[in-house]
Figure 1: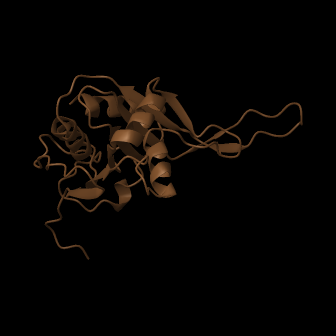
Figure 2 (figure 1 turned 180 degrees about the vertical axis):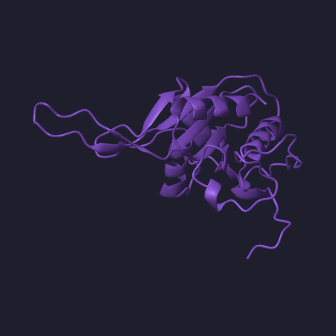
Figure 3 (figure 1 turned 60 degrees about the vertical axis):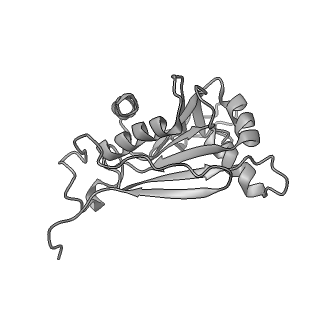
Length: 208
């Protein structure tokens, strides 16, 4: 439940629509996890007094949080993000297993995906694209490049952009679901790239 509580607190604090959530982990017990929240919104930048330029609307940076906790199996991590995605009204949860991008023959896109998963995002129009509270993120990224990593992603309905599009009889008025999540973690294949999808929700009435 801790992950759900963390995300709920961030949604209340930011008061912005949450576009997507991702959680990245290196498959080594007790290594920190990196939680990323991608916001949908714009804020005015400070005016450039040297150039007398007016303030402009800038995309709100993503938030990166380092979660330091004890864990022994990826299934326990997955159990927690399944619970958070279920309660926050997501329609699905995607799990991507990635090999290390330092592997011989790895494509440039694999390196980019690894950098993005661990919060190494380039500036946009000269402005930071991420605000990070993750001191170990660079070391985690280097470790992931050698050992591989797992990344989970979902888009919440509660606190997100998708409430008006949600046709799902499992959702309450605020886009939330009651625990527990009915799905259980599946075994990670390991050793090569693989994608697993968990689907939530249902519609039991006729929609015209």
